[in-house]
Amino acid sequence: MPRDDFPMVTRVFSSPLTSSMLYAGLARPQALYVIVQNGKTLQLYRGAVMTYREFVPADEALLDDDSWRELIAQGPTPPAPAVHT
Image 1: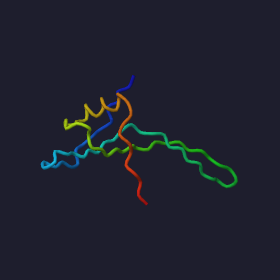
Image 2: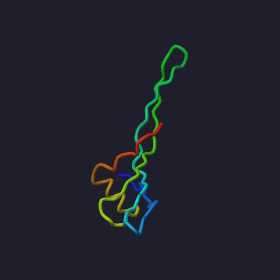
Image 3: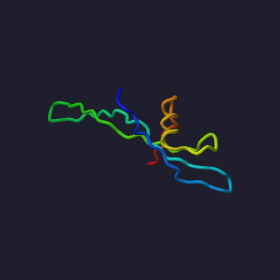
Image 4: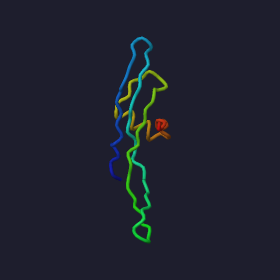
């Protein structure tokens, strides 16, 4: 089985006054499908897109890449940030 050590995380903000932290993390890539019209026919393309997560950890423990990989392996990751248009 190939190594899956890509997911990475970093702390992007911390407040010593409130002991809160904000992390940004990359999770596993997800499949992306695109249908493109080519003249009178349609073509299906498949690729990958990086998944980005932004979250405040439930506890005050510091996260590093190894603990982030363990968190991802245990189940669902935090939700992706909302898209603002």
